[in-house]
Length: 129
Image 1: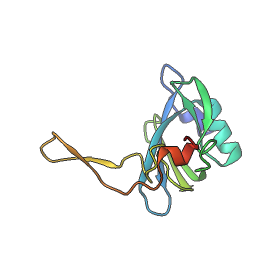
Image 2 (image 1 turned 120 degrees about the vertical axis):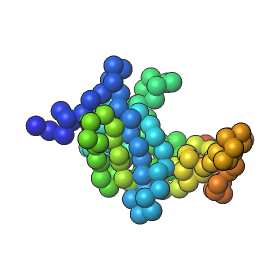
Image 3 (image 1 turned 180 degrees about the vertical axis):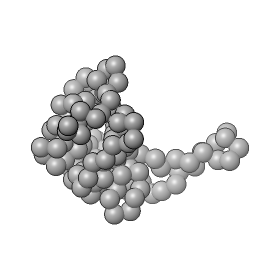
């Protein structure tokens, strides 16, 4: 039995994929995959996801050049989530941060703070003026 047969995609045919930096262990982002994006990721060695808002496949870095080279793919004990270890080129976040998880909630739960330096502005990433 292949590992794909062990996976449990949701009713929309999607599975969450947590992307982690292989060298640091830092969680970079979470995105959705369908069977086609997972197969393309396996074939290309670069992460490909399913955009729920655009209803299409997208390769991480196709616009920005900030690609993710896949080092390993794991799945959890229930088969309903993926963990993808990558070598990240540039910021992982479309807002220009190394990780999409750059905000931390304060202990009182009322405020948050930015926890890392922005590496690039979205305009720099996507060439907007």
